[in-house]
Image (cartoon, rainbow, N blue to C red; front, top):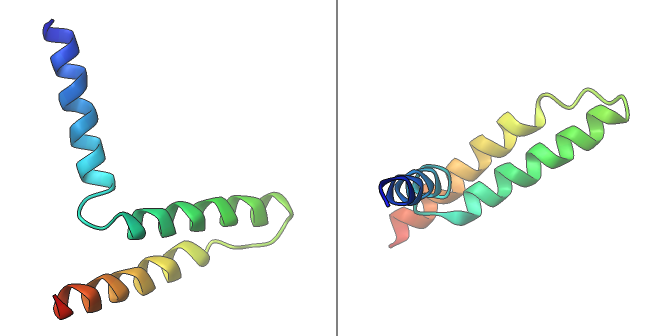
Length: 68
């Protein structure tokens, strides 16, 4: 029983840490990682894509939060 409650708590922590309050930011970062992996597998240097997505999504998230 202790193991089950520990696993549930562990899962809730990571869900809250990764998803947090705004699931769209997490989805955009995941999409950026997938696109970066695809581009890198085709020989395109796409290391810059994820940082750009992070900066843009933080701005979008802050704009949405300031309106509320």
